[in-house]
Amino acid sequence: MSGLLALLDDVAGIAKIAAASVDDVAGQAAKAGAKAAGAVIDDAAVTPKYVHGFAAARELPIVGKIALGSIRNKLVFLLPAALLLSAFAPWAVTPLLMLGGAYLCFEGAEKVWHLFHPAAPYADGHVDSAGDPGHLEAEKVSGAVKTDFILSAEIMTIALAALPAGQPVWMQAMALAIVAVGITAVVYGGVALIVKADDVGLWLARVGRLSATRALGRGIVAIMPGFLSGLMAVGTAAMIWVGGSILLHGAAELGWHAPYDWIHHQAEAAAQALPQAEGLVAWGVTAFFDGVFGLAFGLALIPVVARVIDPLIGALRGKPGGH
Image (cartoon, rainbow, N blue to C red; front, side, top):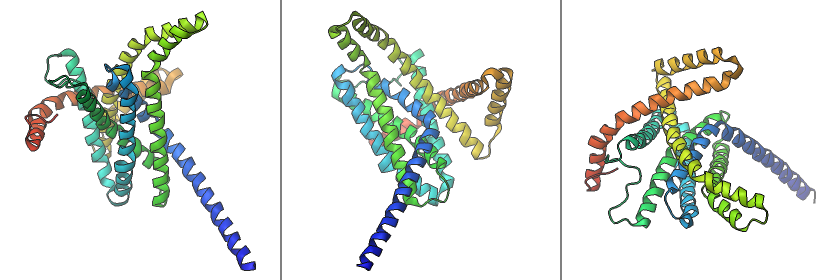
């Protein structure tokens, strides 16, 4: 009997340790998720443009497909890769992030270029010649998941860097998994609410019992087209800004400090000139120059991709183009 009581006491002690570990993991995941908040906002701003132009009945299924792709990106590919890179090749993290940043700059700059050159061969959407909505939807989802991969890589890398050093791998993995699932739920839950807001407004306008409720519904319906267009613009700007920021930070980490330091000094000078909003001004100036650099870099990549990378990918796939 005394042996059984001792065993139960040991089990209770192990349970307490396990519970404390779970609390630690949850707390670390919350802190790591907060560190990645900027990238989360970018992810949420970028996504709604991928459902633009589709029938209302297809909006939530498309968001659901993108969300599943995002979870797969984070848990199946990025989480193991982050742990392996952190353990065996930490030097490779920055170059890989910079490659992703270059992709974001290119995607954003391509959309800006198409805005001023509608007949350009690089157009957002790439509607297939048969006009098949199913094929177009698959292309949109594929493009969204590819873009999400880059933003998710940034989120997971920021979260990993925010975790305390020297942790067991299983605790890092659990914390990153919580971040991945939580952030995906927040981002794509928010996106689902945004893209269906006009339908909610229409429903309120039709069945609302109070005149104020019906007026609210009509107001939502009236503002949503402009809001979604603005959100699409914010999403494109976010891609350029985040991509430029990744490249500049990566270049500084690899030893080329001049651009990053110059922007930092400009932000400090502007913040000192307006001490009442020091933090906001410093952030705004930094984001502006990150975006200018990202746009210039992305525009420079367009002919490289069009004349070199895209034909090469097309040749490897046995197709005339690969983009």
